[in-house]
Every structure is written in C-alpha cells, then in structure tokens.
Image (cartoon, rainbow, N blue to C red):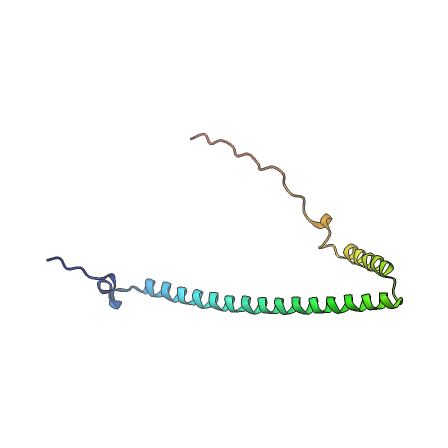
Length: 119
C-alpha cells in the first residue's frame, strides 16, 4: 500500500523559518501596495473620462454658438478660424515641451559589440 500526503500536510506551521515569515510579510505588503495602486489608477481613469466628457460638451457648445453667430452674420467663420489657428500657433511657440526641437536627437544605429577573445 502506498501512502501519499498532500504538500500542505508535509510542511507544518512549526517548520517555517523566520526568513520565510519575513518574505511572507513582504509579499503581503507588496500585495496591499499593488491593490492601492490599482484603486488609484481606476480613480484616475474615471477622472480622465469625466474631463474628456466635459471637454467634448464644451466643444459642442462653442461649435454650436459659432455656427449660430455665423448664420446671423455676426461672425465670419473663415476669419474666426484663421485667428484661432494663429493663437494656437503662438501657444505652440511659447511651450518648449511641445516643440520637436526640444527633443533629444534619436540614435539611428546601434553600436556594434566587440567580439570576445574567448568566443
């Protein structure tokens, strides 16, 4: 007759070392930190979604207002668009983060490895 014991029976709680307990505590801390991070990411995603919806509704309101003023003859749509693009270009010139010249140049080739003498 062959007796087989499950792994949980073979290792009892008295057989654990202080080092194993320390590792289990660290794993528990890491798990709770990861769980908090996931919750914060979810909150950030919800906030980003709300901001996106607000921006979309504001854009629709401004677009409708411009179309209504254009129909009434109060606003010249082409002139408004050219002025808007000019203001956007001014903002792009002021912010160095968004300009392509602020980015470091990309490397085009990988450096070749030297062959080892033992190879």
